[in-house]
Image 1 (cartoon, rainbow, N blue to C red):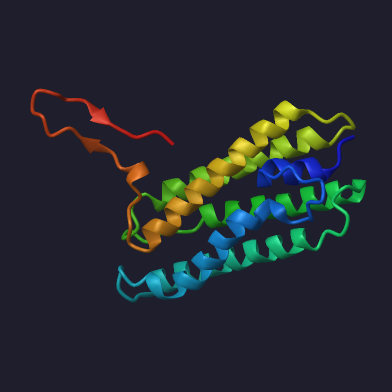
Image 2: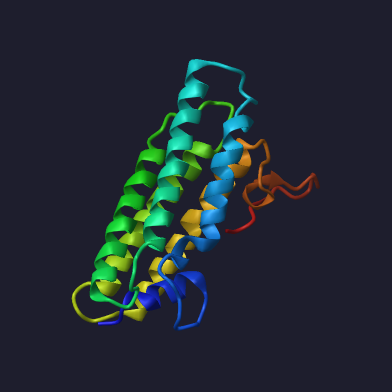
Length: 193
């Protein structure tokens, strides 16, 4: 069975065999930490009410949970041991649960599209975790399942980045749906991602 070194390598994009546990969230960890710190003062576009304060507290808790997952992954001592696979998959399971909880939150109306993006992020994270389990459990490593897992993981984090942008008052251009201003053209264009 291949060890989690390969999982860390795939997720981090690094080839070095001296990878330390935790490179899984290095790139996205910065996003989560930054989002958590910035979220505290940026949800003011909706006014001040109980629904907004509740959502803010829940999102801050979500980002704090992800920070804990990052720290826990970084604490895995030997990423090439069989135990590391078990630890990593358990942490990914917990992260999946956290994404599901985030997606179940009632999103204030002043954040258009966040509810759908949260549902998508949760769905893609669940798919990623499922594929990681299939790729690493059962004794035989499956590179194609790991690749599918990585792709879903990246998409989940992209959706999360969109959510953070919207919460900060910026609508990412990648998720715009707009109509061509040419009256003779009734096509609606939607950028892919």
